[in-house]
Image (cartoon, rainbow, N blue to C red; front, side, top):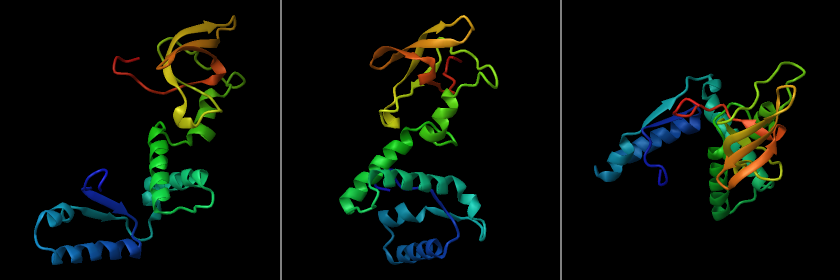
Length: 191
């Protein structure tokens, strides 16, 4: 709450620990004099999933799993002191919030789907000038992969683009089409 402000709603499963916390917070608020603190916390509405329906929290449970995965990669022993945990959580927050919003895991699944060769199954539409892409670079962390706009596409005799020039924040670069992931985004001007 110190970073993002007071939430209007809190969603959680129907666990006894969450029910007890909600009850304890409400009881403690009654003991505090009616001032800014009470007003700040009293407006929060706590929403519980129905009993026996843990699947209804799938979205946030998936984010918890993603956070745990990032934390495990940062420190496999999970041996954190207070300051280390705070820093690790901020790093996890940065990594998670830097990924494109998608249901697939970015590096292990999504990037592979974008760059896989589909010529054996179906013809992929050629990369065209003006589309937004991510430059796949296995040597960099996923949140540091360059994004840019295709400014030139060199087509082979079979009609497939084999090489592209991309305008990035660091200037123009040339890459093979196999190392470019087309982002499924629509810009305001319709491109």
